[in-house]
Structure formats: structure tokens, C-alpha cells
Image (tube, rainbow, N blue to C red; front, side, top):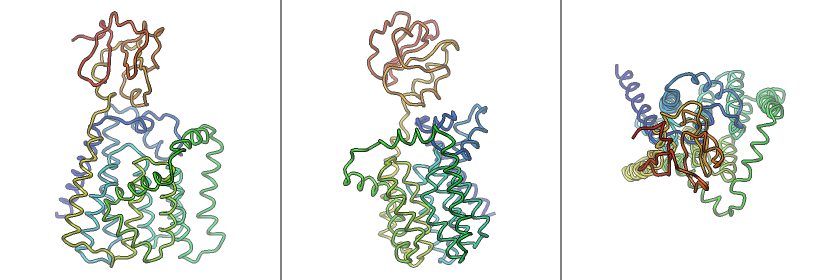
Length: 391
């Protein structure tokens, strides 16, 4: 009965995280997954997401599924920490559930938290001494879920080396899966092209800026306390697989400073603590510090809880005729395509005649507002065709 109550409590926590993420609306990267827009990621998780395309509540269902997976992964953490004292296991479970990686990423429609979860499963399989073929299948699945899984190749190499396997086995379980991923990549020209486009981001950032950004995500991923203990643990035990992956993740984040990559650190921190359980020392002072960090993370949620412009405007687009379009002036992301019930096009004054609504994120030059009603109180300039909307 106690376990059932714990499961229910964890699921309620997952529902809360999913609900919080839904308040701000769909982000542009989330829209790419929800709409199956071509994006530089292998097909495994994208195929899973496509199964929900026809559902009217697609977004919230996927958020709940992803949040539930991240929250209930605490059972893996609990099982991995069997050698710890009961109080330490409880503390480690709490550190997972209240980490920045879980609070800020569980419930997002993103691949990064799923990759972190896949790495945790790898570490759990290693702790359970799972057969190498089973680990190889999971590793292949991880690679074909997201390219970021390559960052954790040192962990797989460590598993093969610890089992004293031959060079042929190393090739089978490490090199061949990566080779298959490379083959998939070169046969899909859109993927390398997209990678080249995104590679120019932050090209002119200084070394200091990159270092500070990486430290920031390191701190957020494990809410500082878990980050510090996990990093010390992997270094003290010389867990070269964890250390190698940690270095690769740091280098990757230094060149791709997206906040949602903070969660990629999370499973490595758990692995570091499990490898060095004596480093799991939590006293009253650290508990207070962790509570303060938790409140700071809740403060960071303000950006998540704030509704996007696309979500604010969405209710006013519901009465637009199906043969009309929404014109948007200025830079806009795929979230506008997801939220809009009709086609979205870039603003041009020659297209106004066929538009049901005009959104001016930047000045709409040459716009004749005759026949349109301006919507106030949404934070952006929005005009809806008079015949399509009633005040």
C-alpha cells in the first residue's frame, strides 16, 4: 500500500510539472517535434511523437508522458543506490526529483531530457551487470533518438572494457552503432545542412562567456549540491567513462549554449555519487542551501510560466475562415504555426487581402487596417478581420 501511495504521489508531481510547462505555451523547438517538422535528429523518438499527431490534446499528453518518465526514473536511482544507507538513498532520490534538470525540463516536449533518461538507464544496466548485447541494443536506440547520445560513448566504452571484451566486441558494441548513425546522417542531406546552419550560433562569444555559461548549466542541472557531489564522486573514483562523457558534455554545451542542455549533466552526477557513496554527505546547512536553490529555480520558472505571444493570440484566431491566413511581420518561430488554426505566412502588404489576421511583431509597413479589428491587451499588435471576429 505504501508503494502505491508513493507511485500516486510521484505521478501527481509529474502532472504538476507537465501542467507548469504547458502554461507558457509551445516553444519553437517543441513545435518542431509536435508538428514533425524536419529537424536534425534521428527517427526513434520522433516516430513515437508522430503517434500522437491525430489526438486533440497532443501537447499535454506528450508533456505528461515525458514528465512521468523523468519523475518515475527515481526508481532507477533508488535501485542503483542499494549500497547506501537508507537516509542517503532518500536524500539522493530527493536530489533527483528536486534537481534543476527535472524541475525545469520534465514536461517539456524536448529530446534532451529523454537522452538524460537513456543515459541513466545505461548506468543502471551497468550496475545490474546486464548482458552486453542488451546494453548494445539500448545504446543503439539512444543513438537513433538524438545525436547528443554520442557524448556518452565513453560510458559504453567503459562498460565493454570492464567486461574484458575483445577488440571485435568493442567494434560491435561501440564503433558499429556510431557508424550506422553516420550512414543514416549522410543519406539525409537535410540533417548536415541543418547542423551547419546551427553551428554558427555564438560564434563570436569569448572563452570567458562560454566558460560562465557552461558553469551555469552545470549548476542548474544538479541544483549545485548534486552537481558538486556528483562531480567530486566521478573524479575521486576515477570513473573514466563518466569523466570522459562529462568533458564531452561540457565542450558541447560551451559551443551550444541552450539552457535545456543542463539536464544532460544530471545522470552523470547520479553516476558519480553512486560510484562514491561516502561523498554523499548532507547536513542541515546543505539542506538549507538546497532549499534556497530550489526557491531560486522556482523563480527561474517565471519565464516558463509566462505565456508566449503565440499562445496569447491563439484564442482570437479561432474564428478565422479556413481559406484565410495569418500574416506575421518580423521574426517568428514554429510555435506560431502550431498555435494557429490556419496557415501562417510572412507579412507582405500584397497578401493582406487574403489574410484573416495580421500580427505585427515588427512594424507592418503599408498595412491598411480597413476591415480589421485591433485586439488590445495581448502584448503584441494583432489585427483580426472584422467579418471573422466579433467583439
